[in-house]
Amino acid sequence: MDRMHGETAVESAAAVEAAGGQGSRGYGAALEDYAGPISALALMADAERATGLSGWGGRRWDEERFRHDFTTLCDAIEATGDVSARGRGRTRSRLHTMLVSRLRYLDAREALPAADAQSIVAPLIGTGLPRAGTTFLHGLLAQDPANRVARAFEAAMPAPLPGPDGDERASLYRDILEYQGMTGPGLTQIHPFGAELPEECIFVQEGDCGGLYGVYWNVPAYQQVIADKADSAFRWQVGVMQYLQANRPGGRWALKAPGHMFAWEAMRMAFPDALIYVNHRDPGKVAPSIASLFMALRGLFSDSGSDPAAVGQGLLEGWSYAADRYVDWRVGEGKDANVVDIHFVDLIANPIDTVATLYDRFGIEFTGAARDAMLRHLDTDQHGKHASRVYTLAEFGMSEAAVDSAFGRYMDHFGIRREKRA
View 1 (spheres, rainbow, N blue to C red):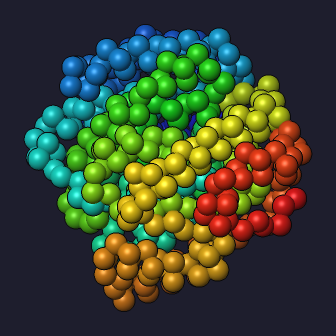
View 2 (cartoon, rainbow, N blue to C red):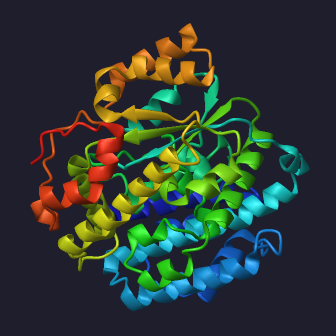
């Protein structure tokens, strides 16, 4: 099945590249099987040959740091990533796509000086615990004609890719996601991935070579090196948003990423007038669900798997730390901040009312067109409507007592109701 799709996808990529000029070329290797080493120098040279470009960002976009971090990533993947034969092709696909996109975006941005003059005004930004409805709510907000989101293909490929029938990015990225295994039913039943779906900020930041990669591969040495990259990641994201906005004006940005909980100050510095909402849910339901997604994503690249108990313990420690830091901010500096806290159980029970309340708090008009579009979306949206999946705390080395101990202060402060736990 994978081989048949790979051949079809390569033919599709070749057609796309043949149709456009030099500036539209470069992504074909992201759809080819690969058995070679994950070498930073080789991959960067391949991207340069594929695009005919060599501008990696210079001082303005911290090319030296990018080269260092990308080299560290590739070395760590080889050292500790335990990539499988199939995972090696997927790994090259992910990294080649990022490298080609970085080269093409920086080239296109330089040719669009209007990008530098763009202001990102009062974006809606969602964060909070993962698996707490942030994707569901983000998808709902994307239906408002007054909002704009970064679609997955825009996040992965910011610069347009002209073809005989117009911009080819969506169809090409659909093939790339399929090749990487991101659209397989086992994964999309846990979390939706698709070329035209609203995408998280962490994917918009991917071209900066940041935290996303620590999810896909076991690369602790890399994660240690990039621990200080939050400011850089947001600077890159703002730059991409400026470019997208200059290329296609209009709309209030609607953004989201649970990971912003770990970069709270950097996020607020990058978007000082942001309209922020934070999703909350019983950590006893969140913890095993996010662990299952983590394991599924790692499984795309490695057959050796990660230790479920180690994954569970790491997530428990990390997210309880982020939750406690948010409580500290809410009782301190952010005590009077106009940040909206949204409870998962209320969101799922009354999604339209939740949006109406959110808009009211931020002084945003909730138009009839927006309401109607959201209602139509709810009629067809499949997120959360697949067969029920049961993840237990025990299978990831956790217990109810451990969860309640780790998140007790957070749950008490926000009055989070316990759900039925498996």
